[in-house]
Every structure is written in structure tokens, then in C-alpha cells.
Amino acid sequence: MSNAIHATINGLPVEVAKGATILDAARLVHVRIPTLCKHPDLDATAACGICIVQVKNNNKMLRACCTPIEDKMDILTETPEIVDVRRSVLELILSRHPNECLTCLRNRNCELQTLAADFGLSWSGLDNIVPNLPCDDSTHSIVLDPRKCISCGRCIQVCQQDQNVWALSFLNRGFETRIAAAGDIPLADSPCVRCGQCSAHCPTGAIVEYDESVKVWEKLADPDAFCVAQIAPAVRVAIGEAFGFPVGSNLTGKIYATLRRMGFKAVFDTNFGADLTIVEEATEFKSRLLDGKGVLPLITTCCPSWVDFMEKFHSDMIPHFSSCKSPHAMVGALSKTYYAEKQGIDPARIFVVSVMPCTSKKSEIIRGKEMSSSGYQDVDVSITTREFARMIKQSGIDFVTIPDEQSDHLLGMYTGAGTIFGATGGVMEAALRTAYFYITGKDAAKVEFEVTRGLKGVKEGSIEVAGKTIRIAVAHGLANVEQVLEKVRAAKAAGEETPYHFVEVMACPGGCVGGGGQPYGATNELRIKRAAGLYNEDHGDQLRCSHHNPYVKQLYDEFLGAPASHKAERLLHTDYHARPEYMR
Image (cartoon, rainbow, N blue to C red; front, side, top):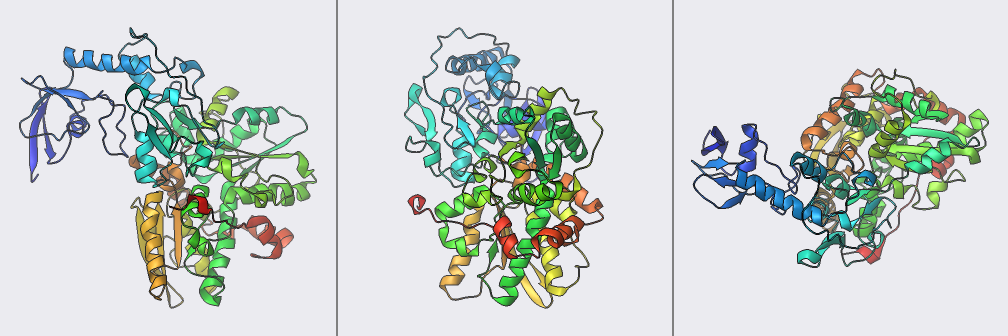
């Protein structure tokens, strides 16, 4: 290894590349150094002080997460002095932390709680000085409880640097430091786009999802309610993590069976809505590309946090946005129209629950009158994967052993294209499969478009369709969107041809598999495995293109008429509104 560093950790020789930290090196020799503020997605801040180590014959304490390892270092990580300092740091943190583990949503899944248990801290010898601060649940998507904040800075870093939203900040200094919306205003009035990445990266219960599971239980117990459930693509490859399954296990059949056992009268799949979205969106793309009806590039809109971000900060891009609703919103509208009509059910009785990887779906379902196109609120409640996992555990259902079941196919049958919606690039790949068919009248010989896959922040490429070169871009993580939009703006200002014809954007890193409502602990390694679970299902499916879904065809034949028809526009499409008060 060129520029290799040779050192020793607890007597174990280690070789690393120059620039590696002590924490990086320790992991290579299977030495565990505890951390609280460090997350694999984020730069080290050394805020907590838990990861201290010593160099032999030197009394100075070093923070392993941010200290580059040097050649011939002889590092100690577990001396009595180090352990005592770590215990003292934990006691200090616990003295300012409410003793509410039993009623906290992070109970048994809290990094602070785990470390306290590891160090045998059943009590702190310090006075309890928990600040008296109110919770902020104004977004109805995430809940901020500043009393439980340990000032690690993870949420601020992911909000400001990774997402470029800048909704959160530290206020005051010293012991008075607290987390809050920037400007100390309600989070709902801040630039927050409800993506939930702050909650996904928080090590404690300081930021969690807005839990609505009780509302779902109440409806399931109501004999007059006809409860309908749908599950998003990314949920099926993440829920298993809460029950000991390998990361990426696709547990679709178990989810269907569990929802029925819970009391849902019909079980649909958001993948059906994804197929429907593709048929509508590919129709829209063809109209813009060949007929000049609308501007290019066409930009996807199935991610509500991205829509929120665009309306607040990039409203000049509204003409480029697809008018398609997100897949779960489409299924919600059809549940209370098409399905209700087919089954002879009063739509007023139908209660639609979406199980999503996402916190921002909670605010999307109430964003405007277009989300009540059925004549009722189309989706009544959206719960996250984490909420669903807790509900399964409450239910007494043995999720591990329950046999697989099928969805109700009328709004539950889907193709492989619908499945890959859950990974970054999946929407683009699914759309290209159908757009190719709509433009040429035949399916592509190869339906995999590898250029859209992977975790690179911005993926660019082109494909040839009927003699036309279609240029595409895929961005995930909101901070990566800016460079794509700037290229579009620059070309427009110069009077040049658009750099892209089609753009996909997902707010969360990795797409929905890394959503803000997914199981805790997501890293790129986990996101890759979750995405692989979706791509594996797609690869094995007999039907891999949305326009081949027989129940989508039946829907158009019996109810909608045709893609982009007046009825389809009313039920399946939406519009967008600039919010200049947020412009930077």
C-alpha cells in the first residue's frame, strides 16, 4: 500500500492509508471504540468526546473519530483512565437527559441508552438538570423534543450540508445550547421539507416521526370502517430489519398476511400506483418530447420532500415538473372511486392507510384539495416503516413465521418496474422502459438501464430511442440537485439545447430505501442491500414494464378511459405553487 501508515492498537498491528482516522484503523482490527456523535454518512465533529483514546507514554486524550492516525503510533483504547472518562462524559450527558426511556419511541433502539447499558450506568451521581423545553410537532411529520438532544450535531449536519435545507440550528451556548428550527420559530414555518433525515440520523429520541399508529388502531376497531392498506416498494426490503432478517430481505408476502391479520379488509400495493404513475408520466414525456407540449426536461415528482423543496427554493422549475401525483396518492384516490364502485362500498366508509418509508408522506396527504380528488381525503393516514414495525410487535402476530399471502390484485398487481421505484434511479429506469415502448411501439430489447443505478450523487447518461438521443440525470440527496438545476438554467439563459430531457430527483440518500421513516442505522452499505432486494425481485418478475400490468390496462378500459384523459387528470394529477416567502 503506497503512503501506508503502520501503527499498533491495543498491541495489534494495523496498516492503513494515509489520512485514515484512529477510528477507521480500529475497526480494521476489530477494536470497538464507542461513539455517539459520529455517523458513517457524516463528517466527524468530535462533539461528544466518547471516542477518546491515548497514545502510549502520552497522557493526552485524542478523539478517535477525527484524529488522523500517524506512523508508529501505539494506541490504547481501553485503559482504566479512558473508561473512567467515558463514564463521566456519559453521566454528564445523562444528567441533562430526561429519564423517559419506557415512554420514548427510541426505547431499545437508542444509542445513548445502549451506551449507558454497556457501561453499567443505572444511575448518575450528578444532579438532574433537564431543561424545560416544549416539543415541536407543528409539521405533523416529525416531532422535535429538544430536552432529549445531546448536542451531537448530526441533525444539523444532515439538514444543512447533505440536504441543503437549513431548517435546524443550535441556539444559545454552553449549558443553554439547544436544538431548534432556525430563528427559533415553529418547524412548520421553517424551510423544513419533512424529509425526516434528521430523525433517521438522530442517536436519541430528540427527533422522531409523528406517530399516528393509535389512529390506525382505532379505525381497525371501528366496525363501520372499511380499512384499506397499501405498502410502498422500499418498505418490503426494510421491515425485516426490525425482526432479525438479513438486510434487504424482501418480505412482501408476510406484510400482506400481517395486514390482513391486523384487520385490514383490503390489502393493496403502492407498486400498482408506481406502474400507473409510469404510464401517465411516460405519456406526458412523449407529449413533451415529440409533440412539444410542455418544456423539457421533464422532472419527476413522486417524492413529496423534493416537491416541497422545489416550491420553496426553485419555483422557476415548476413548468418542468410532471403533474403526476405520487403512487400512494393515486392508489388512495382509486380506492375511494374505482375500487369502491367495483365492490359496491360507500367510499365514506373507506379508510386508507399507507405504509411508507417516508415522513413527508404524512404532510403530502393534506397538502391541498387535489389530495381529495375522490371527494374525500384520498389517503387518511400515512405511517412509516418504523411505526408499522411497532404495530406488528403490538399485534401479537409472529411476523417471522407467518405464511406469505397475496395482495388484492385489483389495485395490488404490479410489475418489476413498480418495484424498483424504491431505489434511486428506479423511477427513471421504469419510465424509460415504458417511454421506449410509447415512442417506438415495441419494448426495448434490454430493459435494464444500468446508468440509472448506484449511489453516485448525480448520475448522467443517454439512451438511443428511435434515432433520438435522450439525455437523462438522476439526483438523490437534495444538496446534489442544485448542480442539475444550474445546468438546466445555464442552457436556458444561453439559448442552448437542454442538457437533459428527463430528470429524476429523490430527496433522501439512496432514494426511498434510505427514507426518513426507515429502520434506524442506515448506511450506504445498508442502502445498497435494500436496493438489491428490489432489483432482485424485478429481475425475477415475468412482467417488467408498467404498461404490461393487466390490472392497469383493466383500470383504463373500465374506468379512466386512457392515459392523460380528463378523468385521469382529475384523479391522478396535481399542480404546484411557488412559495416566495422561502426564496433565498
